[in-house]
Image (cartoon, rainbow, N blue to C red; front, side, top):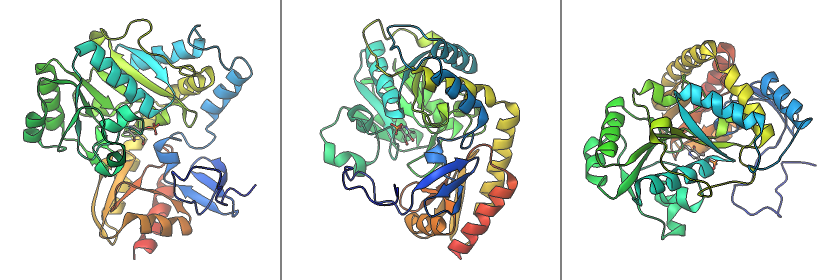
Length: 378
Ligand code: PLP
């Protein structure tokens, strides 16, 4: 089968692809054209330990040979172990497992509504929280929302604008939902002062504070959770993408002192907590140690400095290995040209190039990517 051929039996929700991929190894992909590609997209910040990393690979294989699925009517070791590991990383939390980022945010929306009794949500302009109707309602991008209005009650403040936050966040708000770094919205890191103001406003109004760490979590920014670098511990955290290194999983974490929402029957998911995904995720969590996180910070700085010096880059910003380069031209053209030259990367809005390589990337591969981008942007 040739994966590059457009399949007319798929609904056209994605643009036609130029190339397909048949194999991955670390930071490298093999294309259907037989070429080798440097992967600085990692499946949109998902394959964080690199393709076929031995730890989640072995854990998933072992679990496949043991037990695939029993549903949440019964306990399984991998889900219990993953919840325990995430609680320890968070500093005391309970977990609900689902299958994707948007489902994790749906769980957070329902949780906050039940816990506070308030329907309102304060999110940020430019934010992205997912494609299901609840998550879409709190996504601050009119282009993604407009065709599906009317959506639920949400207000949007400007990122890093405390006055806007205060004017948009009123007593109807039961949840303040923030991405520590707006990923799809242009790789915009939030200021610690803005996040502190959001926490104080939320708690002053009896609302919960949630961080959507679907993209920033699990080591991507150089700490296990991005909030560790912001100095504000949230009530709720959502995770997905990198948690199982490419197997489907999502998670809502609720801080121990915010556990007052769900009771039996309030929420559920047939596949949530799938033993194979959870076994892989346990191995991912065990692999993300202090040494790897230090390397994410160092390599992130190298990438950021290199990007800032490239022609056509007006600003380079980000956290750890979630990096954006603001361009003087459309980012889509640059992503296309880079792919032709053997580098897979992403956009984040019309003029921001987004790079999110596997966290195991080396200095040589970063320099290799920068050389390709130098030629593409020249
Ligand atoms: N939240 C954030 C911050 C995201 O970046 C994404 C996906 O890009 C989502 C939620 C939605 O995740 P999923 O596509 O797994 O539903």
